[in-house]
Length: 300
View 1: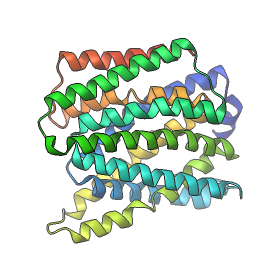
View 2: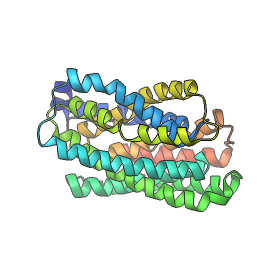
View 3: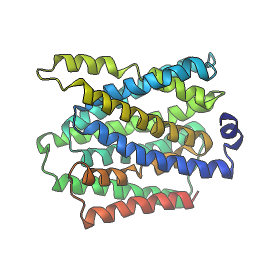
View 4: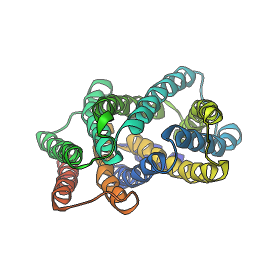
């Protein structure tokens, strides 16, 4: 599989696979966000999810894939630090704001700056038609956030700081998207990067979540948390792994934009799983997001 990815990077076959992987990442990332925001504290959910995918990746990193080259260790250090910042901002936003308000802001901020970062780091250039697609997609994403902000009544007293934290999260999304793409391209074997990323990244949040759980007056039972972590860990491996491979195969900016169709799936999850309403206006805004993604793909 590694040989196929390396051989087809930058080819039409690679671009087609990157599109499939980016859309798969979009669906799975919406599921991942709902798992983290759902029944338990976002911090506890994140901790058990990270522990799960770290444990799943450990044997692969240590015994299956080739070990990283020497120049990869500083890159891994940068990747882990950026992801710590991303998780801290995301958890703080989820703790203060409704999922269907803060999630679109996080994901809408990310692709714009990821496209700019891909231009600066990799020399990628979007066509005017693709920029039109980005504008259409972002108008749908931010329109969805504004509409949800006006209509949702939960967490109103903490919504303003939640939105600022969501913007900060989006900046971290752009940072990790471009830097992770740099890392997976710098590694001789893309699956070495993936395995070691999940192994190392899975070590950071579990201790914090464990101490938070111990300090709770009425901590939730460990069983349901562990089950959520196992499911979330599998989803995270597939979601983040898919988008990282997409950035290895084709343009980073294009993969970042396509992944943000996750906002559409997040709205559907919010309706089906979290009891949040989806009316004609929100459906129209979700249609804008999908249309923008199609324009970006066609214009490439």
